[in-house]
Length: 252
Image (cartoon, rainbow, N blue to C red; front, side, top):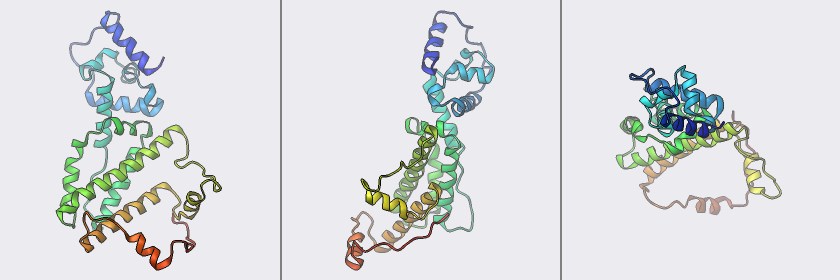
């Protein structure tokens, strides 16, 4: 029986008095229930989660869960909250600000990928209010003027969660993060993949963040905040768009 069907049957049985009534006092905590749900998702996948399976994991009757959650959606929202609470914070180190943020983003991405089946909950239940203190800490250490801070927060957040969710979706389905590419049909993409010097997704993610921060620094130096970008036109004039790129060595 699917998770959705099991939960629907549970709700019907509760209404018709076929199961034990809800206990007068909680047998479990909200946190324990969410952690059990996360374990079930890790083991069986998000589609197979049911309140009955969570209750079995906890060794209680399903009605016990209704002390804390009105339905499965509310339980899933709590699982998403736990995933965010488990993310690392910004460390105080001697590294430059940019590298501290890179390290933080890599750690957050790894943390989410520890639970690829559950990471997709971030698309449906994103408790952003839990990140407000982290945003404030990032802004406090940001050496750029305040008018740059939200763009830095927005960029690093979307790069991190976007990268993690794409990787988690592929991992949960057991497929490669990038499909095979026909070099005849898609020659430019095939050349880009062949020329990519990074051995794995995480290394490419790190370089993407560093490129982003290089752009932040350059926009600040130029006083170009909010202005269009046209640097590729200068590159075309200087080197010509058809000049072959130099051979790169793979970076691990």
